[in-house]
Image (cartoon, rainbow, N blue to C red; front, top):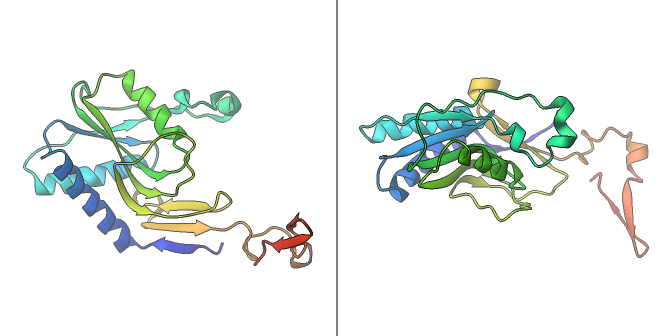
Length: 206
């Protein structure tokens, strides 16, 4: 499937290294920091950030994994196919600087669900958010504190994050469903895949 590469393995590595340095700078060191990865791809990203921070500071950074499936606001529509995974946070998060880690920030609804799940586990001193990609289109007033790359996109486009731990390679790509090679319609059918505005036609297959 044709995909446009937005971040190479080197880009991903540099972005995570920069985020790790920004975390240390903002929090004036690594004391009382807990990294919590949002399942699924947020977990390996949190582990990598912790490893980088520990290479810079003589301290151990707790890393947890958070499942927030039951806190989603669309749980009723997903109930029949929602798979609940384990939440595993190896330390008390009360009075700690908890840094949520995820791969892509989109509408903000998953982050809201994750924060609700965290608050049921303790009362952090602060909750910060680190994401590899911010693609925009927020539906809630949520902003990332640390961003690897801002990627402007349309709602029809898909952002895919591949990580070495699960996919064998680090890469971020964008897929346009209206791309000629991705559109399931034939070229003849796709030619009239358009919308009308005051008599003007816009062909999305290009």
